[in-house]
Figure (cartoon, rainbow, N blue to C red):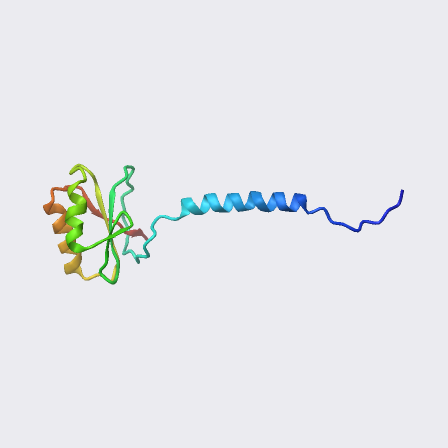
Length: 124
């Protein structure tokens, strides 16, 4: 009953690889927090929000995004006009953004009636 092994059973290897692939794909979707690359400013104290806010991103080139969708400066007011005024607004601004541009953005958002406007930062 001595016979030589001339084959390798690869079915268990394929099963293990498929399980690992599923684990990697599911965890990768949870790790991704923002799709637009922004180098956020750092702060020692940062609040943790539990609700889902409206996220406005201002990148280093000055482009605006609302919930990861690109908008123009004029389109920002139109996009926010349909949102409820009780919603929280989080501004993600690149740390190299001009202060004047950031203040203008926050002023426009507050001018539309949103009272809960905050800045997203990275905790030190």
